[in-house]
Amino acid sequence: MWHLVFCYRHWHWSIVGDVFVALLKMLVVPLVFASIYTALTGLGSAEKLKNIGFKTIGLYLITTALAYAQAAEVKPFSFHEIVMSFIPSNVFNSLASGYMMQVIVFAVF
Image (cartoon, rainbow, N blue to C red; front, side, top):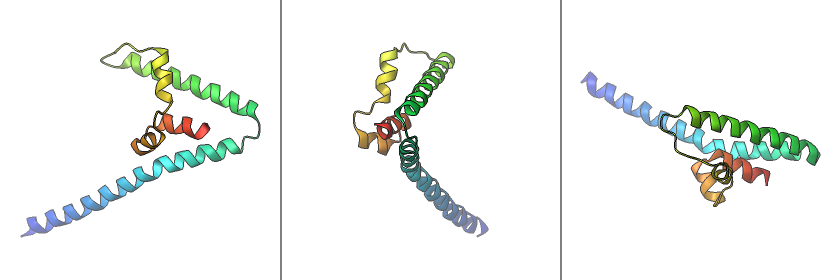
């Protein structure tokens, strides 16, 4: 009898936890988009945007290269592939799938 009660309670809290995580995931992309858009509009000049953009892209390329270097299976990659992976071919697919770098590029442009 107690086993049935415990399983019911566990199932109940499992649903609550799953719904909570799904709601958090649902909020991530719009929050990132709105934060980046607000920050870019508050910069004021194109020179500041250029400096921040170059630093951000440089750091992202360095961390991506380090991740590839430490990966167990290293497949060949090119600079062209990395840069093209930043640019979304379908904005709505990027937003729905949560491809954050593509969302960031969309927010900037």
